Image (tube, rainbow, N blue to C red; front, side):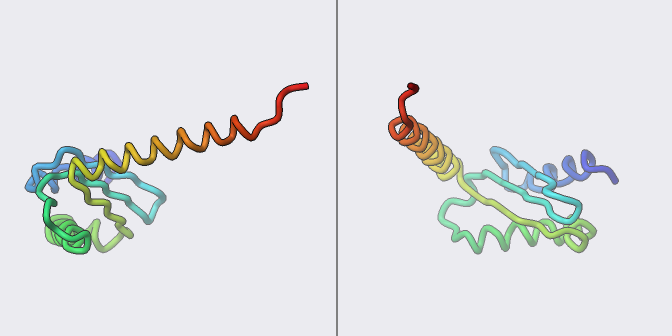
Length: 106
């Protein structure tokens, strides 16, 4: 089975969570990162979210579960937006700090 087929299977298996987005990423031949954004995670601890995602994969894609190291990310829409905004703010701060500390051209 190729990576495209696996990506489609992974994306489909999480439909029960009515996801806003499912993003599988093959880091290497042994590791898959799966990011799931769903408002069904509201009120759940991160460990409960990971257990739920792991259970879905182990029950519906047992070959995948047994043959890959799977790294999960599980966020609500608001959490994902807050993280994105925070990362953008940090990127802007780094850029301005660099510009301020750089020497003028001579």
